[in-house]
Length: 124
Image 1: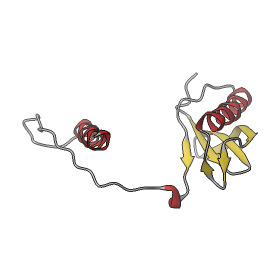
Image 2 (image 1 turned 180 degrees about the vertical axis):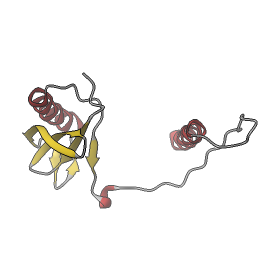
Image 3 (image 1 turned 45 degrees about the horizontal axis):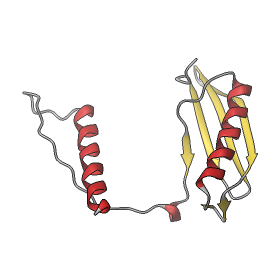
């Protein structure tokens, strides 16, 4: 079963990692699964050991999956604003449609081109 009717939240905290699975039914949302695991690899809100943090996240996700009886495919993650780094980037593609109207696929292609260009600039 996929989680297309489900919303999954992940919070990576200094003390614990929490996962909440909510099911949307009509105009109601119900919590159907939770998972919590002691944080490992996290110090003062910063991931300092990616392998330990990933292991703790996997354990919390597994607990939530078991309780909700679903396989989690996508999550919404809480990220502290002071952890973000904004980097200027550019991307360009040719719009192939005769109408010259930009669609969702065009936007995805520009984002991929911008990411790739930025990646190459940082590899040097």
